[in-house]
Image: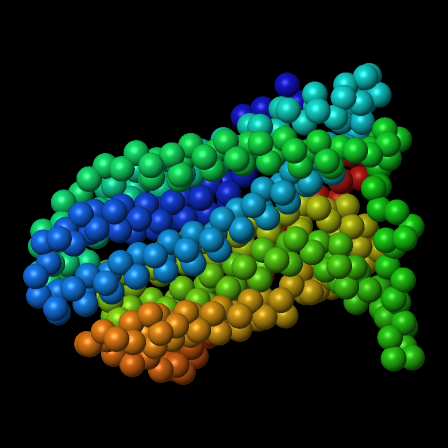
Length: 382
């Protein structure tokens, strides 16, 4: 077997995203199925308005949250497969040289689907643990008849079994596609071709410094990691700001749940992205230190380019949460009474931005210390 369970265990980011997606979607979809069962028991017009509001909320949350997290999990899965192939290209090249076909090598990548299975199972089980509280919260004013928690096998099929099978099949297919390279290219130390070598070393009549040129090259060659940095900032921005609005639009506990999920996604994604950047540039950092570059210059070259991207992600998250809440309040629930008007909350945005800057810079400092501890001797011996 080319890939073992130990390799799949490193895909904790996919497990976390899958867990959050299934946790939220299972609660709301199970609630949607159960609330539909009491539709015939509703007698008052006010209760019917409240019922329609709950049904619409469940649909929006499942589609928006589930869809967004699903796409992110797919991107992260493809990134890990590509990263694994790039870091094990010599071993894979030797196997191809010995006569192994692309499909025979790629079939072992099915174990990457285990990370999805672990995440979906934890999310599914966690949803049922939270459901008694969630059902009580959704009907805390007793506007509807008592809603009984029922078990729906289709949810297990859609959110646990099918994602695991689909992600395993996708892993095999994508690995087979990425392995369609000449054996000699896999055996080379550097997969980067001459056409991909950075050419823009002069800007506005001046030659870029080595540190600046390396910073831009790192950013251009790690486009997927740029997406993860933006996504982490997006989660922090959107979820922290949205959680404050839940006090008026839903409940304080719902806001706490959104805040926790957002922070878990943000920190997990950011940790994996920055760790991958540093691990993929250890030799570059070692050589820079040999030639006398300071720790600050090493950090600026390797990590500095991602700071603007993090602020872009924060801005996107701010716009996203505002647009989603306005859509929910002004369009979906426009005919329902008692729903307060939603306006953009600048104080909350400022608080969220200050917290984000502080946390991000602390993380950058921690990782700069990690760069400082990279052993030049160990890197040169490899």
